[in-house]
Length: 303
Length: 303
Image (cartoon, rainbow over all chains, first blue to last red; front, side, top):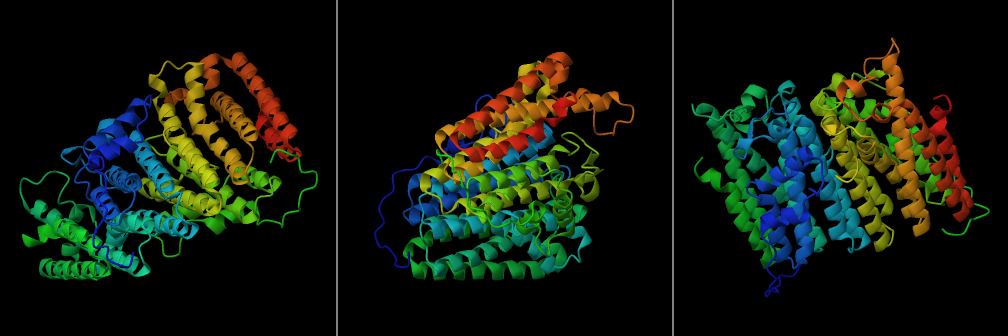
């Protein structure tokens, strides 16, 4: 994966992104109705599917088998879905709306929502194990470590804990960054690294992907923080936005001030672009990342 | 694994059961304090460690590497610990005490308790993947399917959903059994099958182990149901027992009446004993199961 393939095999058209979620869904026939409701509802309103599309695009760019890329993509999206279901719970962000609809716990209860999140996580692990079962020992070991690091206390679980405890922290820019690294960057790292590991990317490429996940994670979270402030300022703000201040959650613009936050986000955007440039120098196919970079940083143009 | 080894290699003494949990604990240095509290507290008061001891004993009996058996044992115990942390939450059983101490969510909050459960589950998957990484493809595939089946909607997650929804079900003995199969039998199946799969047990042995997990699961849950009724009847009942009736949870004795429940439990005890007999006919080392069988069915003698 160090040389740039000039002509790529044209992959067979893969099932459309959202139908992949249905294909790998943990919602079995005969499941207890409330749990079934959580699972089907979450998949029926899937959001932008940024992570799923990213894994699929990287899988194709790296000539990964379509079935394998689809399993990895669904797995990452399931982990992400689980984290949103849990984040919205009354004991966490106590959100009322998600993707323009009432939150899962308001429709199906907290218990079924927690169990639904576990079902998505369980299915995510099963899909990654199945997708990577034929890989050599050392790659499976790396993938296992990456999952452990990105999803556990060093990643998503730890980041969410820091997020919730932020009100009792010094509320510095640094503390904001630590929570964002766990919550947001870890999941993007998974989306970038899983297909790369499965396709045998070089250590240099993987290092750049990890860097990119940090820049993207901080940028994505910082833009979300700006949006939260702006919605708080608007009188017609939906009830579940503009809440970082009220809940004492990390917010870059609140911690560092708006001008400093904007400068920082522009800097992160350039750093991410530079990482993508380094990757494209390793192989032309990495230029697919530019599409996702433009999408992710688009809100910065109007900020 | 079909012939009975008459003389077994004496394994090196393994670290003591509870120190295995500390060795593989997801509680990292520098973790957010509440999350750290959930993890360390749960491991400091680990209960009987029935599942952990079972995996270790079966691993040794089948000549499994001590390190591998320890990882599998810790993984199963971590999954079990996670399920207890979540079961006790206000939105599930709303329990006040566990193992003679206040429940985790009362000490560290609901959010940290949910995140702690996720940290245990994440570590469980990482340990199983690491312990089984060197096994041949077909065994890893079987192990992955077994995890998916035992922990997901067909197992633990689905069983807990049925448990919570029982009040709205016809409350039959059959419905009681369905919830117990998911909640209790699935976890015992994991404890019995994981070391057997890792050691390359025969299909016949694995079939008997699955049967045993069903008999043990129903027996264990039925005995727990009797205990719940007895504590409800006692005036000095702790606050969190005798709650099946109040919460509308499945209870064999409530569904079928005490005499019928007792007869059923004695029948299950005999069936489990017969399965163990069939296993011992496959290999003398399986007789270690009798120790666990006596321990599990001991409350039946005084029932």
